[in-house]
Length: 277
Image (spheres, helix red, strand yellow):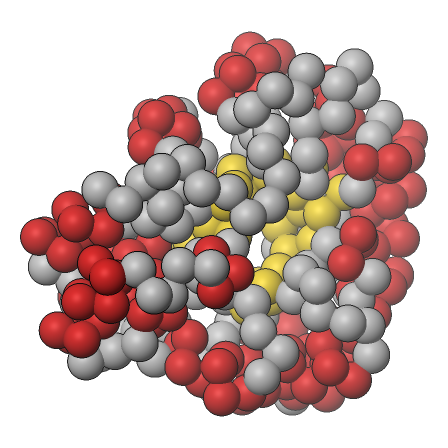
C-alpha cells in the first residue's frame, strides 16, 4: 500500500470522513500575505489539507486563500483548533463559531482540542460532540493527548475522537501512543515532521536520503506517510512547499524504516504533554 500513496490519497476517519494523508501546517506562519500566499501555493500544487488554529492568528488568511484559490470548498479539508482559554461547554461552542467566522466557512472538516486543559476538558468534549451533531464540524478530535488523556476521554465520550494530532518524527516515534490510537480507531496526525530542521545532518537520515536521491526533509515526510500518519509539514516558501509534496515518487525499504525508527530519542521541538494533569 505504501508505494500507492499520492498527494490525493486519504485515510478514513470515523463516520466515513476522508482526510488527506498530506497537508500544509501554518503554525508560526505570520498573519497576512505570507500565510495567504503559502496556502495559495499549496493548493495550486495539489495539497488539499490545511491545518490552522485560533492560537496561530491566521485563520482569516487561510479562509481568504481558500476562496481565492478557486478550488471547490468540498475539495479542501480544513482543520482548526480550540485554544486553551476557550475550554468549557459554552466557551467551546462560542469559540467554534468564532473560528468559522474568521475562516469564512459554514463548517469545519476537523475541529481539534488543542491541549488537554485540566478540569474543563470533560465539558469541553461534550460541546465538541454537539458541534459534531450540529454539523459545524465533520469530525472532531484532540491534539497533544497522551495515552492517559485519551483513556480518560474514551471512558466518558459518547463520540470518541477521530484524530489525535501530536509531534511525531523518527526522533520522537511515540510507538506506544501510536499503537494505542490505532487500537482505538483514532487516526494519528504528525505535526513537526521536519523536526524544525534540527536533525537534517543526522548521518542515518543523510545516508538514506542519498540512497533514494531525495532530501532529508522528503525522507522525514515519507517516513510518516509510510507509517500511515497524516503528515503536515509547515513552510511559507513555495519551493519548500513543492519539495514537501514531492514525496510520492519513491518509497523507503523496510530496512530504511527500521533504521529511522531506531533514531528515536524522545526529542521534542514543541510542547511536552507528558506531565499535563
